[in-house]
Length: 296
Ligand code: FDA
Image 1 (cartoon, rainbow, N blue to C red):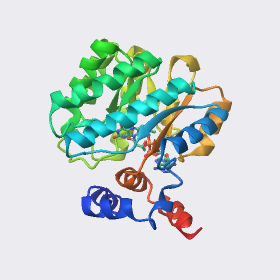
Image 2 (image 1 turned 60 degrees about the vertical axis):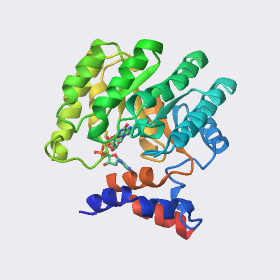
Image 3 (image 1 turned 45 degrees about the horizontal axis):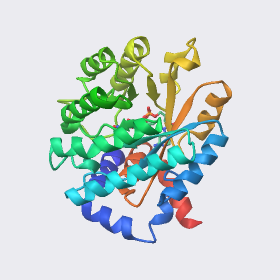
């Protein structure tokens, strides 16, 4: 119930505008967001490297409504790629296509992202393309497949809660496109997604086996130790485990100590509201973390 309310609130644009511009609300983000600027994100990235982990830098933002905003997203992500190259960070960039104009026009979005992927290739890094709600999946995968054909160095994301995902993951693996497998974070109807968490977990394990057998540079994105049973007995150089900044820090450290390759998804920027609300919806107990940061 609380989860549904939080997911509903995550989509409320007026509340989002109010929260993101309120100085009072800003301290709420500390646990899960690196800061508002690229400089703060780079500092957090260095601290994460010292703990033995790589990073996926995510300049927060989604569902932009104008071409100008979507071009500004490109500029911000290009700056991140430049920092990765100049400062030799062990980092990729992670983006959402609705931040690059997917709501405006698919072809426009594709050509807006293309310079970023080209720059990432030149810098020796990659672009991870997050998956958003189910209405975007076809267009997102079409763009990823096109960019992979032109530049390589892109990774797709597959969500285990969608019925369609087994077909998608098999097609991506056959095309040698790297995949990040996650459970899925959006509110979806039972017509497209498994309604029960146990079904999602079971599908994650099924898709994880496909990915680890047939995938290129596979990434398992999860904080669920039961899902990590998938990698038992596998050599750590065959895959990476991805986790979110601020979530299960105990597990992150333990996996590094055990020799696993771990990459942290590191969000930064001013447009933090929908991201934070999805993290709260996944685990309403996180409300205590954010309220505590407000009190301090
Ligand atoms: P699950 O939700 O079952 O949680 C397992 C355990 O992990 C919990 O019991 C708790 O201990 C801990 N945990 C999980 N979430 C937590 C939180 N927010 N705070 C504190 N503890 C938490 N989704 C999507 O739709 N598109 C995408 O592109 C991505 N990308 C992505 C990248 C990376 C690196 C990660 C880790 C996750 C995503 N996700 C995502 C989000 C993903 O779909 C999912 O919502 C969350 O990872 C939670 O699922 P878990 O696999 O962690 O399992």
